[in-house]
Amino acid sequence: MINFDNSATTRTFDESANVALHYMLSQYYNPSSAYSVAVESEKDIKRARKRIMSAINADSGSIIYTSGATESNNMAFSGALQSLRAKGRIIIGSTEHPSVYEVANSYAKIGFDVEFASVNADGRIDLDVFRDLLTPNTQFVSIMLVNNEVGAINDIHTLHKYAKQANPQCIFHVDGVQGFLKVPFNANDCDLFSISGHKFNAPKGVGALYVGKDVKFAGGQLGGGQEGGLRSGTTNTPGIMAMDKSIEIYSDSSEEFIQSMQACKLRLAKNMAAIKDTVLNGPPAESGAPHILNISFLGVRSEVLLHALDARGILVATGSACSSHKNSNNRVLDAMNIKGPRQEGAVRFSFSPTNTIDEVDTVSSIIEENVLLLRRYKKR
Image 1: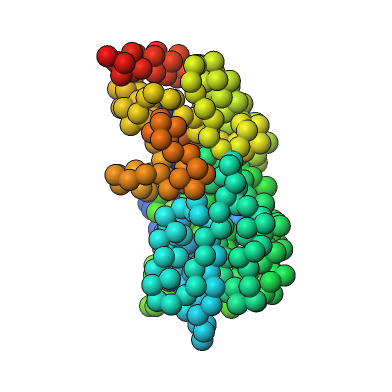
Image 2: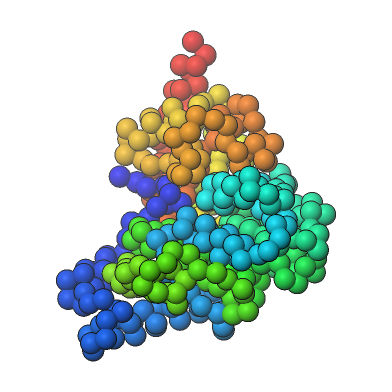
């Protein structure tokens, strides 16, 4: 099996899985308890919070552990907006993940003024359009660091600056799920930042939301008062500590991992360019995120190619894993004005540090074989 769909999920590092087992079988105590072995678990979790802070260059603020990206993104909205007396403007990107896009739509239904910032041809938020949407009444902005389908990297520093110029009290949320540990980021450029463990070789079911020091933020679910009273529920110590181990591994090998993923991406882009009637979607391969590549194979339906590759043990994607079962146009590609045969033939490839150049070359040959075959059948 060759997995080139690592933006959907990744294999947990062996070391991280072993850490999770340790906290399930040996150090399994509830960190909210008062006895010494439980207190040790609480200390471990405190150190894990600091590692996340360090990874985003945050020198203040707090970390709320969650079940993953969807909860973190939902909590960003609810925590920032539920205490507001008046309903003002919300701005998100037109290509945001469903866990932001659908939440924003739900706030529009209850009276908030929701605007969608358009993107340019390579999938990045158009800075001029974004600036024109800002008003003194803009209360909340949510923008992804890296687009999950085409790998476009948004200019978060400038977007954040514009938002604060329009309204210093505006809360700026960054969906960092696809960019965390893969694209440099500084927490000075946000108020809130979401991560999800299974995107960087940690287990599923664990993530976090960074909350800046001076952010007025209300809690989510009520109960035992865990996570500083902002997210009650028994602490997922095995997941948290396994995620911490994955962050440690990534941080210690950051340059090597990024270079490895980038090398796979560039090799595949070069190989695919040699196939007739292929088109790159998104930024140039050299300038986007190091791990995501989106290619259209004209004259081939992407879902047919996906199944042909699946039969050969190769995993790729035709869009976001969170919306792949919906029978509708691809909203992200629509926003980039990619339509018709180009959208129908779009395939996303995404890499992890465990992928190799040999895998890329193997997959490239199989793709070329299948694309040529499918095009011949279509002409009959």
